[in-house]
Length: 251
Length: 324
Ligand SMILES: Nc1ncnc2c1ncn2[C@@H]1O[C@H](COP(=O)(O)OP(=O)(O)OP(=O)(O)O)[C@@H](O)[C@H]1O
Ligand SMILES: [Mg+2]
Image (cartoon, rainbow over all chains, first blue to last red; front, side, top):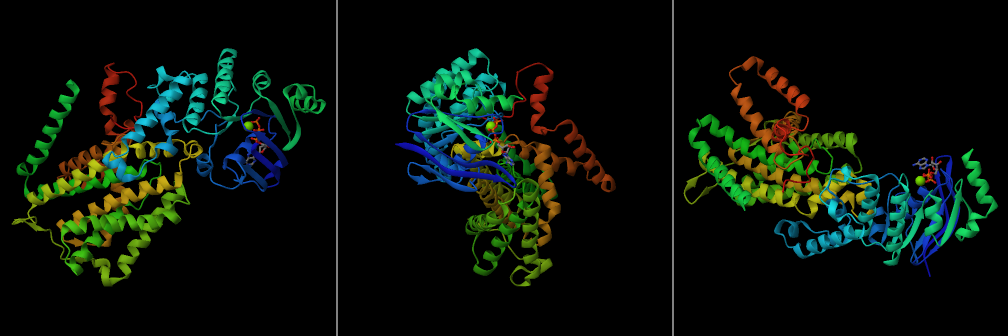
């Protein structure tokens, strides 16, 4: 069954058409690659799915419900969490506190419980979940460091940890491999596989072709805001139009 | 273990000092001490509003809302202070909650201006509607309570009363800031989109901080009017608001106690240069500029600076989430 169906989504910014009548769907449990040259509209697609933008036209169906136009926090509550293209962390907070913010949905509390300390059980559970995720992502021995002090690879891992702590069912990862060295890339690929094995469907936007080809089951290619091609990594690798689009973009 | 003992001893010394202070002061200074105690609550409650990154210019007016509420309840319904204090906070919080709808459509500069405009509108209501608010002349005749034969009109008993109320309010504010809610408020401040992406309704948290801050400054307003006996719209104008901002900025707003240090130090300083009557504003202004230039993180950062100079402690400049 399709977890997510994008139906004829169009997004215009004034005169610029960033997405033009794009449709595709994503199956439960897969790692879907969403690729395309710079400016193709990949991040814009993510923002439309996660509620940061409202599509100009079309619908975003998540588990049978149209979520287009809902607010980001409402969509997060439904189980869709995005990570950001630019490394986005709470630089001023520690690694642990960063990840803890991710537990908002399960651990949020009301004023009186907060003042009287009646939410202890909830907060303890959240702390445990955070430690579990930090262990999983290999960050537990850095938990008291400030996020801003981490090397790039760990910053990306932390961004994903924040998302994971919120226990998403669909995760939108925007270029998690950008700027990583080969070693970090391999490590992040393993982590991404482990995330999927834990039952989370993933849509991955990425320019690193080694990672995309190695991880994704199926690829969706965008170019100038339009759906260019869909297929298995093998098919896409040999697709004339895709090759042309990428070569054209390189000029 | 050791640090815990230190904390307990420290708290006891502080408490003893606070209790003893008024007995060493002249009458005029006892008055000032009461207003200082109340202003501590004003800045501490303002801090929670600023936690989400939005600086409002309506805090002083919200104090006035509390003050007018207490005055009207006292004069018309003969309600005692135990009722007027929480109700003053409640009415301030309610008005803040209503103002959230227009105000939190704006952010940053627009929010600043919007909050100022909303505050001036409220002040205009006090001025325009002579009945019940008394116009520019305001209202008078509010009295402090008499409990168990102690007349709280006297400075020292009223100081203890204010100290208790303010202490209790600070305790609650501190609990909130160090709870899950405090963490979320910080998150909303530093990276609202990231907070949204994991399910934080940033609008609600901005509103919550504003309502909580208004509640406690409303109580401060009631405390003030019960002692002063009179209330006018001018007490809560932009002039007082500027003082709140100065106290918070000079004290430093990265930690819970920063603004409190700010208001205490500047009040004592202001009083100590009283004899230089004509040039007092100039001295005050100069100190402000110097402190902002050389202590951008506020007085609160001085201990960390000292440590850094003498090479003790490593990342003492790291802005903490909260002092633990
Ligand atoms: N908020 C916005 N306002 C106006 N134009 C925008 C906005 N966001 C994106 N665009 C434009 O939409 C187009 C698609 O941008 P998008 O960021 O989705 O590309 P992308 O595929 O993620 O590219 P990259 O691989 O470089 O990240 C670009 O031409 C971009 O300039
Ligand atoms: Mg992008």
